[in-house]
Amino acid sequence: MTIMRYSLASLITNALTGNRNWKPVWREPEPKSSYDVVIVGGGGHGLSTAHYLAKEHGITNVAVIEKSYIGSGNVGRNTTIVRSNYLLPGNEPFYEWSMKLWEGLEQDINYNAMVSQRGVLNVFHSDGQRDAFVRRGNAMRFYGADAELLDKEQVRALVPFVDFDNARFPVRGGLFQPRGGTVRHDAVAWGYARSADSRGVDIIQNCAATGFRIENGRIVGVETEKGFIGAKKVALCVAGSSSRVAQMAGLRLPIEAHVLQAFVTEGIKPLLDTVITFGAGHFYCSQSDKGGLVFGGDIDGYNTYAQRGNLPVVEDVAEGGMALIPAIGRLRILRSWGGLLDMSMDGSPIIDKTPVDGLYFNGGWCYGGFKATPASGWCYAHLIATGEPHPYAAAYRFDRFGSGRVIDEKGMGAQPNLH
Amino acid sequence: MRINCPYCGARCLEEFTYRGDATVKRPESIDESARDAWVDYVYLRDNPAGLHKELWHHGAGCHSWLEVTRNTVTHEIVAVELAAKGR
Image 1 (cartoon, each protein chain N blue to C red):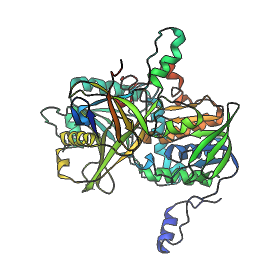
Image 2: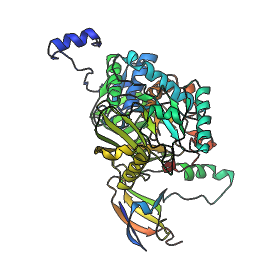
Image 3: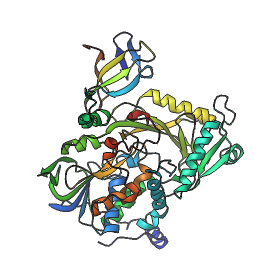
Image 4: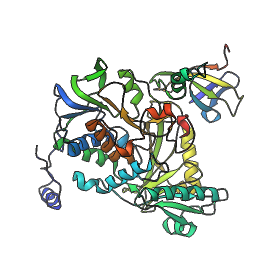
């Protein structure tokens, strides 16, 4: 199939012809009877996996099955922030690779994802927190990421409107990652879908998996709403619903489902040209291109599949916002929503084989899956194609829980709602 | 969500702290042979979509540990008991 490449010339031509000649950018095929690989889950990670399987490994006899429509899940519910400001060796090389893939994404998939490296600023409020951020910044630089320690006046130059003299949590400085920023999340799903489709991947929407066919310990296919689809390999990619999907294959996971709420205000003139996080509570904020402030905070903290949260966390997020940016109190919140998360037992993800031959697992992304989208697909495609974990994701294994090699950025132990 | 504490009555969520799945059982043995049972107990969860028995601590109330049966799809709470029942 040929694909219409986007260019200035194609934009002008279509504009002059009333935008009547644009074609759908991916097909809507019926499933074939079997594939080399069936990816369960057409979110960002599933679609990026399909893209890299096709492009990097030449595996194109692939289907992505999605229970709803492309982009209907967490890839369209997150707050669009990308960054690689992690501390631990199991995490930082992976997220920095993801950052590098974000930087080349639009050229790679010929799609405008509005990658905006506007920087991510984590402010600190105390000497102890400054020390922790120095350590984190050094860990980031050690793995080739960028990090700058800013003093109070440098922070003031970036965000003059934050409450520097807050009586309880004065802002003393910040850790800044200039290469971090935001990416238009829907375009990530669409761009990966278009690229995978153009290489022969079948994207099958409104086709939920209803079971797995396993013979002699080996996967042979997926039962779906559109009938049985045979597969040499099946790749689960359904973070948020991992436990209930994996359960159909008899697997029990180190994961709880939780909800994270997000909010957007009415649109205002340009105010915030970076991503900012509060250091004394859980609050993070950026300004969308439409002008709304997009923000969020902590997870609600109890098991849920409801895609909506409760008021205590709304209040907590609002308090964090008021403590950092008092002016936010003048704005009206337009919308709030919730997305389901796989909260893993150590706060880090899993990309691994399962005890069922030919069945692979990608999940446990907690509240940080969006920024990982490219590297997750890259490493998962590598695992599916070669059978070996990618070096950047080598720590993201199921056996880390039994062996004690957990990747616990927050040092909270096996209590998912504390990560 | 409001939780109907057996001692204090219906109270707001802010008064409670969540501890997770109430059905996991701490293994009796600390032998190496019980290793897998410990991994199960500490890390693995059923994580059902539907009724879920879970522990909540009424920290800003009577300090009771409660076993709450709640629907994780609708947030409806169908039963609240003292976690210490029968122990």
